[in-house]
Length: 278
Image (cartoon, rainbow, N blue to C red; front, side):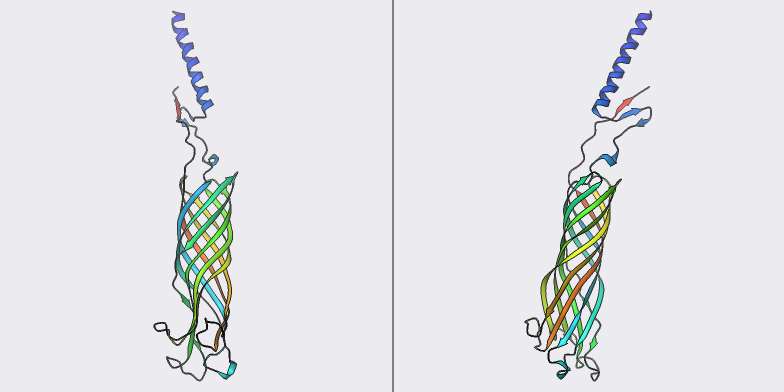
């Protein structure tokens, strides 16, 4: 009687212990009672790879410079004046990047491209105190429109749980149209200075990105961008009137963006949990 009970119990114990050991060797999570032991999410490389995304936000564009009359005080129709104005506009665009995780640090590169924005404009400047204003009053306004813009930047971040704190910076580029108009600009008429050009500049910023799961994440980012200065002298083709010139036209932006990104691929699949009953 003792042998018929003891031998099956010993065999069951051996099989159970060998099964548990085999599961441990495979790295599979084990259920102990009601607890499942699973691999920690922090130990999975959830940032490395190629990603794409889109962003929307608000961008403050600042334009400053000096408008001058080539003939000086001899021609009051084109007076000298300094301008410095800014306006906030809605922005939208796409981004794509490549990054890799080293420990808790993430290093990568990102390219983004934004669509056109509505123009911003200065207040009206009265050209001469003797003029009363209106269509015949020689009042001037300076305007700038960003037709498109983009950047190629590096990103350096620190990952904590499912979030990434990062800084970014690099090359910026934009195509913009700058003009000074006399009175109101109707059907393209009354331009004094007008030119479109693509400018190169630089940008720096910082942000935070948070994972919903391995593939999807959201981000919030601030960036400052400086597109440098450009002059349109009275002798250049951009000066429609031979007396007018635009000197040191400087454009810079402050952008706040909110975006979503999709990281291609997926983490290594974990082995299915082994359930132990006792």
